[in-house]
Length: 208
Image (cartoon, rainbow, N blue to C red):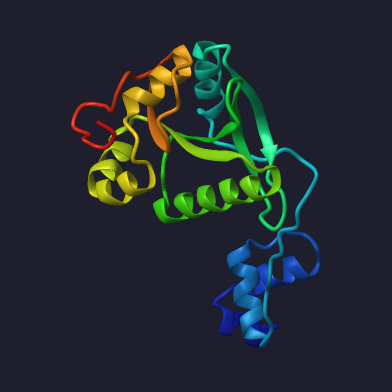
């Protein structure tokens, strides 16, 4: 016990309490002791049956869009993606007058833009292969200093992925006009106020 304590940098009395079950070691202490013993510590996370933790602003953003959507659009929420891709899309908006489905993801932040683009592409391709018909993509973003900075820094990348005008996409959702194609729609959240912006926020050229 003394050798382990010295190598791990943990007091001998603490190791004694841990061995007697009188104290629960922190993860840092556990790893230090395991390393001193020449062992390894691993943590495994298994899929459970509980609900997924989601973007805390997502539900309010979805609610706002649904309230303003034209009856032409039919909506499904939390739609499972068929094999070989595993996952769920936040919403699928289907046109009542055409074989078109818009795969929608609602995000208040974009920590990894390349991952977001890849997931959207994989999910929309999987749904298109399974159900057939035309599939388009919609990214609904909360306007924040961070998301606006990403839109400016990666304008060419995002414009390639979402080339349609923001204003045209908003008009289509609200009035039922023809869908313009892959788009980004911006939203503002200020306290209890949640609203769809008619176009890109100030200082953002993407989608104009």
